Length: 437
Image (cartoon, rainbow, N blue to C red):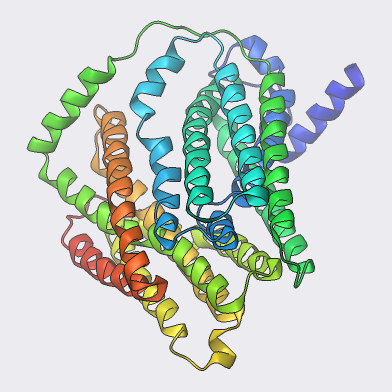
């Protein structure tokens, strides 16, 4: 055991650059002693979670699943809204529930197990469902997955704050992003090696691996040494909602920001339809899905450096420029279908536009997160974030339903043109926001 602890300490010190793995400022001495081991468990948990997220992506894998089982096109429009809103809407209530638990890691474990169960349900649906009923059951499983994701997300941050010292958390998240990116590329590479393989069985296997990823995530969470925390304090959720609604009446910049954020949903809503359009035009071979996973992973890895420094200078301009990019990518995605069949029926052009849209979408996310943090004060920042997330969750569901109906009526290519027009409106709205940096 001592040798194992020494090995973990050496790896921890190499990853963090620390010469003394027991130096801590803001966590108890008992947690500090366990920090190297907890650091590694957090890292493995993040790897399992990210791999599972990518293999059950509502922007990529689930649209592919919907296409394979022959679900109606309008249901694809609900995938991203359900995935995102399920984690956002209950946030203000879940935080109060978690506060009552002296050890929050078991909430994390519960969320991981529920996500694993939902992934197994999706795998079963890939094998034995079809049509409208199959699509409806996929959406129900996604609701379960999304709610569990929100549960784990909040608990994960809480447990990290109790087990990893302040000046080590950024390093942990950085390494987590690196290993997760490598896992994503590896998963996409395996799919590409499958080449022309088709069939529901292979997609079910992928979702089974996603379930395994969440089992790893939950097992690592259970192994973290967490000291019991305080259970008192916290604000009543309804009081927070009332205060937030009053702020909506008083802070016009906050309202203006949320209108821009709503219009910028076009980037997230376009991604599954671009993936579906690529499948409809090029076929259901898993090699095509693998290519999309790979380019998505690479794009995600390069996106943050592209936008990061610019956001520190002007997050408003980042939001505006990302809206411009969204409009262009949606137009290009629709325009591919107008080209000769020799070009439009290949997966490569869709993959290229998909990668560009992923980069743009990261700009949307980074720009609006930075703007919200810089706009709010220390006293109201937590409330502004929770309120903005809740509003976005509601809008995601409403807009997703409308977008889905339009896609069923107009087709995926025409729907991308509608989203391109929405992004044009986001350009104007973001341009008119005041600078906050």
